[in-house]
Length: 569
Image (cartoon, rainbow, N blue to C red; front, top):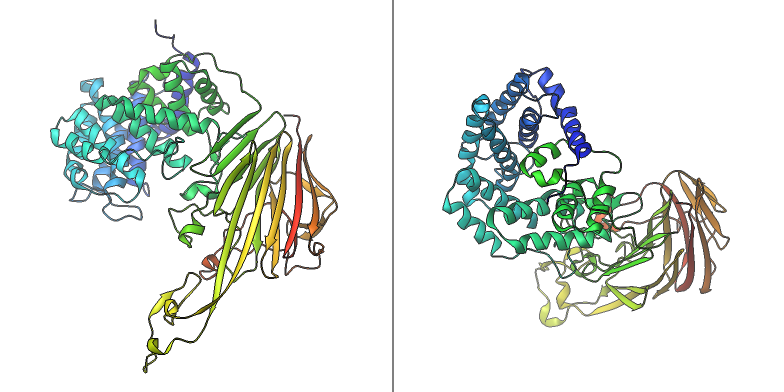
């Protein structure tokens, strides 16, 4: 027997949709100036869902229909002769248009099932979908998740307007294989794209094509994501290869996927995640349409599993470890793409944060290690090794060279040598042909993840260079025991410091094992974060914001750092 309906959930999703749809229906003839095509299609879908839902204030509303038609006319106006949509930073983009067509097709199903009263809306949606079909059928992509968004649009088109060519094209994309690794992460390692693009696309494809393997891929990703949920209700993103690597990402976009699979499989851990995703209320206007299209979402959740603590997870493919206890949640990360590719680039994991620590409301958002070595940027581990249990070693060796005169057989009378990138900068000097005098610099960080935080052992070897460890705390408290430097900055020496927010606290103790003493607060030239020339040459930075505590010195040097959490959470 199916689970009973969760009436409160149903009412909540209707209220969330109404917060968007009711103001639009109140001015049904108002032109949606400045709204891009994806926003227009999403509004049409939400208005149509509100019209259909008995729990919406717009159920059966003629004004909702009129507002939908106003938006459909605006959407048709930005559809180019190719059927693709104008707007955004990509030109004639099949995948960007696929996002819009997915909503158009869902709105079509909702409108067509309503009967003659939505006939005008249905015909307008069919016209827009038909005009886009040819270009989506032959169009290409430029990111991994685009393949699945585009495939989902083709599958939705086939669902309502059957055409075997559409399915053939979907199979062509799927034949590449879903880009999910052995640990359950998609290749972009992005919470944003997993929750908003890949998982919903694969769930749709699994339904239309009857592909249980695609459903299994989503379940694997959601299982891994359970260990990436942080105490503040966000999902870890430090390892992402996309824009979210620098930002906090909420759990709520995962709600429909955790909820659906919890209901269909009975998994209590997924039910717990679904409850967490809705803990701050439901404010996603698209959920109403999803419940109408997938009625199982409205069923009551199974009993949630209790959280298991302590909990440990090492995701070897991303070089990310997490330990959660009743006192602390600690993350250590050594999976940057920069050491291998030697550049900062969209699509690479570039975040130099290698540790985070949550102690209730006291949060150490980022630990980073900067150094002055040929301006090659902060420490980003090239290797992460699990030593034993919850102890890990992160290592990076950088090398840079001075170049000798060219051998006689490589010299040119005209002095016109090849313009070459030698990994640090470019010049017309034919670098590969020259003898080199190389310098190397190695940083090793060993991290012991403990019940109440972490212990760090940091070794800096190579030529004498300044280094600086930056600890960025989330605003809400103020470091005690560190010396204020102004502008949200403090200096830590070997005296302990604490960062307290309410009853929650993180205590930091540092000690030098070998090398010179730590520098004092008068050394502003050392106590600073240097993003490296890949950023500074373009006038940019990846620096953090918040309450930043610095300790620094001159290598070679070895020091220990103890991070101890006290939390009443």
